Length: 290
Image (tube, rainbow, N blue to C red; front, top):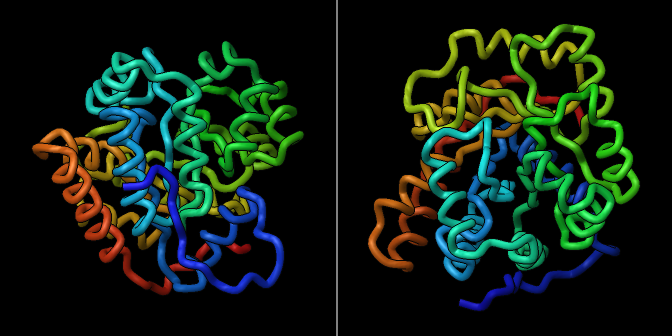
């Protein structure tokens, strides 16, 4: 398979929108269909760079958003499944250039790309340099689960300079005053956890999730993405009734781990994503305003 996505040619009404605007448009199209958008997560370079590109291109056929992880050795939000995948990528020789290559290869795919990054490797790379390189590669924004809003000014300045969305992960324990600051500074969407704890949970979703999302909607017009703990199509369907974006990661990695051979890995992963996408129902749940 070619390393670069080749989209079918189509008439252009004007210049293509920049990545952040395209992310907003992707969510707006899902909203017009009265459904949640599907975001699928994989760490860059997992299980290898070549195989990662193969799988990402297949996922982009059925996902609205590709959430691409920046592998890191101390991922505080991630459970053992994603930790193991990130460690495999790092052991295989992951470098930031592989992340940028992955983003560039998806630039003309149907999906928009968000990068999920922890702050220490971002800081080590250089905030201005990271924001510039990610934006030039075609990322729409960056999810930063470990960056407190109180310490975010330097990154926000760098991201805003190049037009990147900054997506904050918001816990149910967040105070109203702090939530107001996060909503004012964030862009693209807010990220809400479906369960308490780290990624990869296979238990039930948190009972208080609907009430938490109602609280978020009262505080902001930003779309709400829900991830962390969505492990089955039934849970994805449940979340899609109340969220704007349904985010799945560990379940895809488990599927890759269980498959034998590169082609089987790609086929099994896209089949799961297709099942997830098909199960995101149209409903009468109000979506966030554009």
